[in-house]
Structures are given as structure tokens and as C-alpha cells.
Length: 434
Length: 197
Image 1 (cartoon, each protein chain N blue to C red):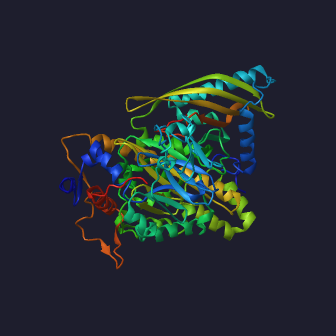
Image 2: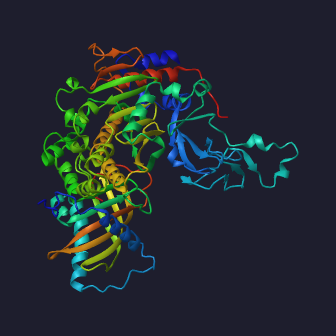
Image 3: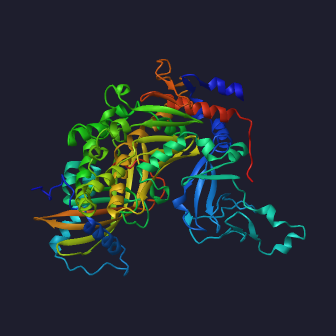
């Protein structure tokens, strides 16, 4: 297996089959989506004891539950009796038990098999505990973000060890959003299917090279209607001379920082006008005073941090984008939006109207390009996907913590996550569910 | 003095407007089973029928500037992300545009480099089971089932659901003040919906 990955993941290029091959996709489920920490849900989505959400961990259907003691469990949503889906709703509360609709087998939200109807027919030696729902053995939360892994080594070392310096970037993101992670709430989602391999989406997460081109429609429209100095126009021209930068944070995590340009002055002033902007500015300024209102306006504008937690959690603006593979050429791209508790209601209205902007004006053009890439990757005559930008220009600097900083248009994001991907794919670890 | 009444600003989309939207959501449900008796003038009803059909046709024919004219200066175009629709002040929508952002949407498509619309998505709306009833003064409400066939990259896709309308008389013409598009799969995975629904 090892040799095979040396052949297809190389210094400045990866082979097209990394995206298109069914066997590689199948192996990713056992490695990338099992043997490292995978993001599953935010604590605010299961706020109360006995609440749950149904999610996917790679291709696995899981239920993320909070039991009566507030402990979080990740249960395989598959009845241990005959295989039927135990929980058929997407979310719920006041649910200490799940009953399989087929034969009535009932499980606690800890996974424990609580009742088997007419159990005596299974004989004296029947052990209910051997029919507990299968569990992902390691579940951890970092400031509201819930992850799980099958891997014992990573599980025991914990999520913070895995996140490394990405944890500090998450802290900065929380700081932008008011500083209290318990006040950050998921407030609905925009869900899209993308006809491309999941990595076509992940590639773009740290790509500072594409905005000037892929987002032409957004840039031209904004220039025409609102003039210069708006939104992403700092991505035009000599972007590598700007103070923006991209980073390899280790363990496949990467970071692209737009803040030096976006927040050079007011990021809110750069924002395309949100629906109701003038009404909110007027009302909030009256309610809390102009100075406090200005702080709320900036925190309602995207954080300017593209923080990518390998393999499936992207912080974009004030939203979380979660990428889930559905098939080798089909992916779920879900944008979770966020509101903040304990701020004036209009602040959250402004956040909602702001978070709807990029998915209407930016993401659709990217998605069209991801799908076009995946189509091109089917062509057998051309083997390679290039990831060599700034590989040979000696611009990278490594600090004492091992964080590598590059210029904004570098492919360092792809090189960094592919190094981790390759390590996981070559690993002989093959864990099983508890 | 700031001009607060043109479509280049958005003073109108205040809390009172959102409150009105939530009252419309209640009303569009038609909890009594049938739509209230129509007490509106026959000519007005005919104008409203023409308006919602024209709005769908103009979107399909990509006559987007004329399509924008179907909307009042103080209008909202709204695609909820949940079903039934939640309060858009507290939950993200798939799209929620005032008139200004609708103009942005049209301008984006008109750049010719909106790659989600290259090649252009062809659509055909079918509206059916349209019900009209009296709203506030100078307002008619309506609800219709819809099917949209959308063609992109040689592939057909069907969208369906129901529309809620609030139609208002602006000067002498009926215009759309609110159009809410309720997709039956609003809380499921969507594809490229960058045309106008």
C-alpha cells in the first residue's frame, strides 16, 4: 500500500485517481474518516440532556446524543438486530431511548440495549449487552465543537493535542464572535450537494489564488454597483505582496488569514449592503450608542479567517462549512450559520443577512468550478493535478513551533493536508467500533 | 435628508416588516382549510393573476430587468431553509433578498462570468392551484403550488413546493411585495439554484 501512495501523492502534484478511484474512496472511509478526529456537531445543537442530532461520520450514519448526565455519545444508527435505521429523524429532544421501528428493540441514548421484546424466546444464554448500539469510542469537545475518532492513540491524546495551534485560531474565531463560546449557537443550515469528490471542495478551502478569477461575477458586480474598496477586492492584482498569508498548522490543519486586508479599516464598511442594513444601523445605534453598535457591526461581519480543520470542518466567515463524502463523486457541503446569545436581537438579524451573502454570490461559482474539475479528472490521458504553486520560490518561513507561513496564493494548504492524508492512507491502523 | 424610500437603501426592512412577514406566514397556512372569501374587485384580481404569471414567465425567459419591475421598491424575495419556515431574524435562509440585493443578483448574472450560470440555466415554472384572498388595505394575498424544471449542463432537475405572495398596489400597478418560495426539500441538500425560483 505504501508504495502506491508514493506513486500518487508527490511533491507538487497528486494523481487524478486520488479523486476518482473507488478503492481509494473506500479506504478513505477506514482511514481519513476513522483514524483521525472528525467533526460531527456543535454543542448548541444538542443543548439539553436527552437531545440528539443525526449526522454522518464519513459514510457512517451516526446519532450524536447527550445523555441525562450531559455526556455526549456517538452511536452507529444501525439496529444491532437486523440492520434497520434506529433513528429516522434528523434531530430531537426529550429522547432518552431510541426504539427500532422494525421489531421494537430499544436502546438508551448511551447505546445500551435496554429492551428486546419477548426476550425469553432467545433462550437463557441471551446477553442483551452484546446487542448494544455500536459506538465511536472517542468523543471530545473543544469549546463547543464536538469531534470523534476510532483511533485509540489519537483518542487518548485528546482533541487539543490533535488541533495543535489550530486551537488558538479557533479561540481567535470565538473571540471575534463575542468571546463566550457557550453563547455561540448554530442557527440553521444551508445544505448543498456537489457533484465532485469531497477533496475538490477541501482543495479550495485554503486557495488564495482563485478569488480573482472564480469570483469574477461577484467582483465585477460589486465594483459596478458599489465602487472600489468593497468586499474581496483586495484579492485583485499583486496579492502575494499584501500582508495576507497562509499557514500549515500541522496535522493537516491550515489557515488563510484575510484579516490584514479585510480588517485594515472597517470590515463592515466593505460588506455589500445586507438587506435591512440601514434600518438595523439606525435602530442599533439608538439602542446601544454608536460606539457599541460599531463593535456589533464588525462582529456581525465575517471573521476573515479561513481556518481548515482536517478533514471536514472549515471556518469561513462566521459560518462553519462541513464537508461530508457521500460517494466518490458526490459530496454534502453544509454551511451552518451562527447567532450569538445575549446580544440585541438586531445583531443576529444582521448576522443572518450577512451570512446569506457569500452563499448567494460566491460559493455557487466555486461549486461550478469544483464540479468542472471533477469532470476533468475523469480524463484518463492526463494524470496529474498540480499543487506546486510557491513550492520552489523559497517564500515559506517556519517558526519555532513548526508552523509554516507562506504567501496568500501558495498551494501550501493542499500540500499540508495531502501530507496528512497520505500518512493516514498508508497507516496500517484499522480500528473497529466499540 | 436621506431618501429612505428608494430601492438603493433598505430602511423599510425593519422589525415591523419582519413582524408582518411572520403574520403572512401564519396567513398563508390557510388554517381554516379554504381561502377566505374574496372581497376584491374583479379587475384587481385579474391584474394580480397576470402579475404572478408574468413574474414566472419573465424569470424563465431571462428578461430579468422586466422581472425586477414586478417587485415593489420595498419587497422581499425569500427562500426558507426549513419547512415550515422559521423566523428569518433567528435562522439562516437559503435566500432572503430585499430589492437592492435582488438587483445585485441580476447584475451578477449579467456580468457574463457568473460561472454557476454558464451555460445559462433554462427554467420553466408551472404554477397551479392558485388561491387569492383579501389582505390588508390595498393588498391581495395568494398562494400557489409550483413545479420548476431546471436545465443545466444538459441535465434536468425538478424543484417543487408552494409560493406565498403578498401583492400590493403601488401607484396604479400591482406589484409583488413579498414572495416566499417554500421548497418541499428546503432542509435537504440543494443543487445550483442560482436562477430565480
